[in-house]
Length: 390
Image: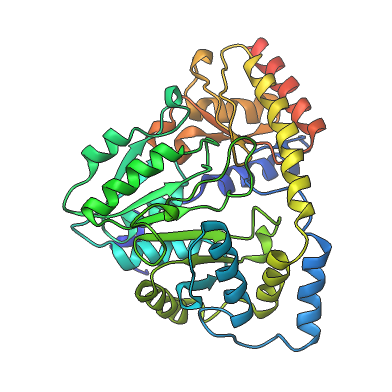
């Protein structure tokens, strides 16, 4: 019998894939399931990006690349972040990875250890807490509350910071709530981080999927540039509908980028060469498809929010970014897990319990509206009937 290392018991998971498996099992039995559980755009990758990868393969991009990424992509990323964050970015600050999750993994591994603490949003992307636990550090949740439109209280953050705090994780626009940190929030957080010399992992993968307001990055505030205390976590999956391509990156202080590159060498060796050339095309090519996708998401958001607010026992704040809604279902009398199972079994709608994103997600569900207007309306109709027939 194989004996596992103790740390494996501390490793969490992403429940969306477990719910997807349950939904697929029901479909195999002949049930019709509307998938609102998985967080990926339902659009195809733009043709010019696919063509760039195919051209690269035919031109011989079938070999190892430098662990930090090909120069062409790192230069394109440096130029993009320099332009959008209004600060000079050196190519040496950029590390390319197969998806954005490795940046999350590597940064937490490089900065946190036993006896240290990491502050992270809750409800939030479940891999934050999972990785903090895995490396033996203490996860310290900062609650996101509905009454604040799922923006956390900066005074509460201040009270959570200790001499053991090694990292603060931010995510705006946010998964699962669609909430956004305001400029004044980021300014106050930046002041705290500079005062206590705490780095920030800023998860900005939903930067381009916003419906109101202007995207703000904490890296633009005094003392918080990517040369100082901010690690930008970003990727291509959401913006360019490239989830299956597995292409992400981080922009950070050079000494940390060097350690991330060492971790890449020790784990993945490098990111697929052809995929990286596709990334260059994505950044440097036309952006029309992004705008069209966001417009479609905005229409879907408005439909699903209005529909959820009309359901008995359900209320829903309108998200300002990403492509998720986080409705409050306490009025139904069900727990989050009960509601997840209920809507799957009785309505044929796959969604996620709010507690899949942390303890403060109790009383909520997450639904992805990365699906057609027709399917969203059908899901709402099915949910209404299931609730009325209880």
